[in-house]
Amino acid sequence: MDKEIQWWWPLALNETLCGEPLAVHLLGQPLVLWRNAQGQPVLMVDRCPHRGARLSQGRIREQAIECPYHGWRFDEQGSCRTIPSSPDFQPPASFNVCRYPVMERHGLIWGALGEAIFAPPTLHDLPSRRLLYGPFDIATSAPRAVENFLDTAHFSYVHTDWLGDSEHTQVPHYEVSHTTDGRPVIEALKAWQPNAYAGATQGGCVTYRYEVLSPYSALLRKHSDNCSLLDTYVIWTCPMSEDTCRLWFAQYTNDTTSTDDQLRNFQVSIFSQDRPVLESQVPKQLPISHGELHCAADRMSVAYRRYLKQTGVRVGVC
Ligand code: FES
Ligand SMILES: [Fe+2]
Image 1 (cartoon, rainbow, N blue to C red):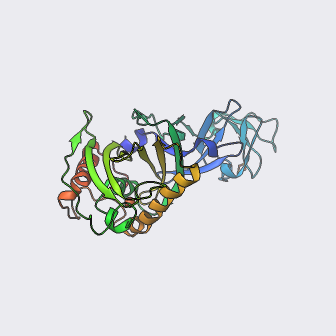
Image 2: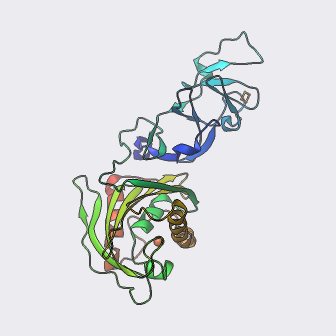
Image 3: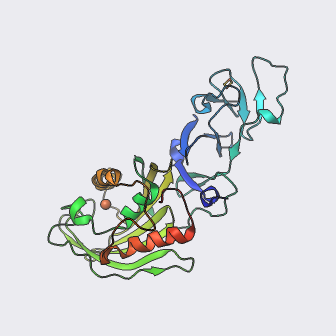
């Protein structure tokens, strides 16, 4: 079985799934999310078995999702319960819609296309204030987006006067270590940043800690050297297809003075600088064996690519 089938994938923010069905894409497959009467999410193939209409364009009625075309209703098990045009007919199991495992964690709804054995990553020691940004739909593969999140050498160019400048282009030497299950980590990497935070009034040194959480997610902890600000950012990515992804950023911060909008605007500004470069990269899949060049500052990217190779994932890599 493909590794990708065995993962839990982030699909939507919890709060965006309310009373209406929500269409999502995962690994090229259209899926629909909705909530049952208890408020639990339900994940199904977004295709009515009758004539192939999108269930996500339907509505929720009497604890079932109702197809917009002829009103067939499917319950949270995927069983066809009602066929309004033939009300005396008892639909057999062959009329069911395929449903998939689904759960909520870290403020997101996660789904799996098979029996998932790799749980969503756990997070530890986080500052208590959490903000979630996204979804951002990007015309590149999920591993390209994760590698960009792990890369600091682009700060001076892509984030000029924000996270870097022309006086500080050199990436200091850093070591990559590995967790016991083989995920790459940088324990400490120092950087000088002109505008390191929402609300920063002057430049300063920050210390980063990076950790790859899974092939498709990573975490960074950013600590200001001259104030007590501590931020943890997580990138959660979902490969909608081989070369497109949907991603979210989570920020966990001890910043109690900036407003939610200030924090969001900062992160959205940073990512809007990344996007055009990310979408320009060729190939869109991340080359994990050969085809691109590395320098000493790319140690983490090299470790991430090696990890992807060892993990045996196939989506988004070439
Ligand atoms: S296509 Fe769904 S009820 Fe006919
Ligand atoms: Fe960036």
